[in-house]
Structures are given as C-alpha cells and as structure tokens.
Amino acid sequence: MRSSNPVFSRRGFSRDNGYAGFNTAPQAGAPATGANPYAQGTAANPYATNPYAQPDVQHGAPQAPARTGAMTIDDVVTRTAITLGTVVLGAAAAWWLLPVDEANLGKSYGIAIGAALVAFVLSLVQSFKRRPVPALIVSYAAFEGVFLGVISSAVSTYIGPGVVMQAVMGTMCVFAGVLVAYKMRWIRVTRRFYGFVMAAAMGFMLLMMVNLLFAVFGGGDGLGFRSGGLGILFGVIGIILGACFLALDFKQVEDGIAFGAPREESWLAAFGLTMTLVWIYLEMLRLFSILSGDD
Image 1 (tube, rainbow, N blue to C red):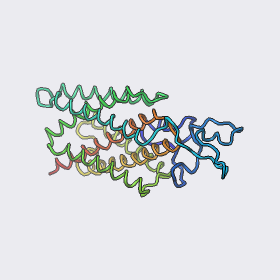
Image 2: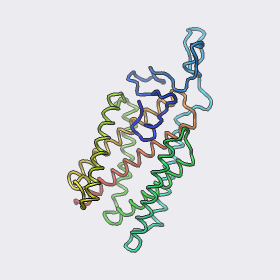
Image 3: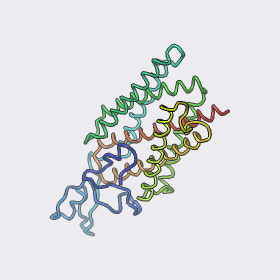
Image 4: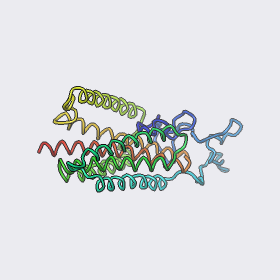
C-alpha cells in the first residue's frame, strides 16, 4: 500500500511495483510480513529475500546487520530540516521583499502565483523521477516558500497579525501530536485506515474543485466551503486529513528504514513530509483566518 502523499503515491519505498509497508501485523523493528522491495535474490539463495541478512549459525535464521549507506532516521530528520528550512527562508524573503500594500499587491500576488505554479511543476517532475533529485526538492521548497510568504503576509496585513503565528503553532502541534500518537501506536496504519483516508481525501478534493469552479464562473465564494460555518467545518476536515497523511508518511519512512532503503531515499521522505506540512499549514491559515474574521 502506498501513502496518500503525492510523492509516496507515485513511488513510495517500492522498487518492484510491490508495497513496502502497511502490513496489518505488528511491527517490531522490521516489518513482520511482506517482501523486501530492495531484495534482489534468487531461489538458490534462501537468504536472498533480504540481501543484508546473514544466516545465524546457532538458529539458522537470517539476521539483519546494519547496512552501510542505508537510510536512517537521522538522515530523514536532516533532509527534512534542510527542506523545511528552505521553505522558511523563501517565505521570509518574500515577506520582506514582496510587500502586499495597495501599490504592490497585484505584483506580489502575480509573483506568488507564478512561484506556486513553478513549485507544482517541480513537484510533478520529482514525482516522476526514478531517483530523488536534491536540487529539484530544494528548488521546490524555495518556490513554495515564496508563495507561502506572500500569502502569509497578506493574511497578516488584511486579516490579523496573529493569524500566521497561530497557523504555524497549530501546524507544529498537529505534527507533534501525530508523531507521538504514531510512536505510541494509538494510530495504527492498516489497509482499512489507508482506504478510509484515500476515500475521504478524494471526496474532499472533489468538493474543493467544484467549489472553485462555482467561484470562478459564478462569483463570490462558490458553494460557501471557504467561509462561514461550512468553511470552518471543511477547514477542520482538511487539517484532520493532513494529520492522516502524516501518519501514512511516518509509516512509509518507518518501513523504508526497516527494509534498508538507500540513504538517498531520505530526500524523498523529506519532500513528502514537507508537502504534507504545507497542506496542514494552508488549512490552518484558512481556518484561523475565518475564525478571526468572525470575531
């Protein structure tokens, strides 16, 4: 099973059109079931299903020693910090260099929309690459940061200066909460969980697209999914979906480490986690903007 994250949906941590994770069996340092997608063995070698395992002389069972060059949690944390740091730097630069006052609002919005489109194209290019390309990932983060910086500055200027900080803190709390819940196994990522999240995400995106079409051709706020009570409801739903995406991404990272994914895959993990956190931040920003406007 693959994560709902667009990056992991394309490739995940699988090399043979199989699935690295989402086994329903409990995890204990390594997946209890499922084939190792990085294995390249043959029937002649009973230990080839895991190329990094060696037979135990006493028990005849394969052991899995540490593999040089394999992805670790430190690799994922470091690459994620680099990617998110680039987003923050891009946002800070856009905040200061692209003012959203009346004289520069159109220009700043134009640059923000252009940056968002470039970030979207870069994300698609990376998603179809066979290997992670750090330059593409960092470039995506930079352009995404420019978009977020202008949008955040506009919200701070025209809605409330505290909304952006509330959205940042909310995003951090969701990330920390899901991480703790996942590590404590309060959230169990199973096939049923994956199916539910994917169905909910597809329904959510479909409603948002319909709302956008009504807004473009009918004017106003479309069907009202972006303001008022419905806006608050859908904002909460969007945040919950983002939290579910995080759980799916944590599972993919955990399985990638357990299966001995190459270290370069940590860039892919960082890319996917960054995209999910951007989703959560934008939903937080919209929710707090609505709540602030209703005060």
